[in-house]
Length: 186
Ligand code: 5GP
Image (cartoon, rainbow, N blue to C red; front, side):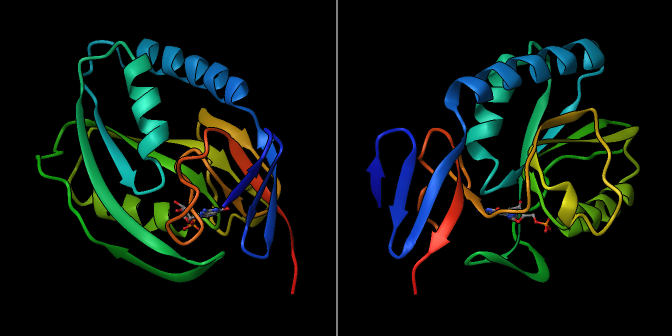
């Protein structure tokens, strides 16, 4: 991976350019955390962080929420390389009962929405009091199912993005801002 200033990253034959700066991410996370704190005060919600991509977003968001809460992790994966395989696998599970609890799922990005649809169906079987979704990024042009939430960090165009937790085959998660694919040389 070659990082060129703040604006450009090269990985192999792919070039990425910065889409969302670290300052913009920090500012938006502060707003989302304030809204969540206000909305879930006294409800002791259960945050379920969807690994791997949401780990950096969740770490920053949850530390900014002044809430008494549980934090659980699941691993759901449908992506290989730069496109979705359409097959979602759940690898880690939730370790506590969710019946009657207010559940908040924390995602890095909603693309087709298949991952969240699949996970929402599993969660409903546990009879939580409520289910809400928080995502740092959403690609509305790619949604195959209706996705609405008051907690969407940024709506972005239909482009492959990396950084701030999002990877390209396991690489680039540690970039501190979001970069979008600009071109791929043959
Ligand atoms: P969906 O099921 O909504 O199509 O895909 C959700 C998952 O696919 C996300 O949690 C993320 O892991 C992965 N994904 C979707 N779009 C992108 C993208 O642009 N970049 C990266 N790195 N992962 C993505």
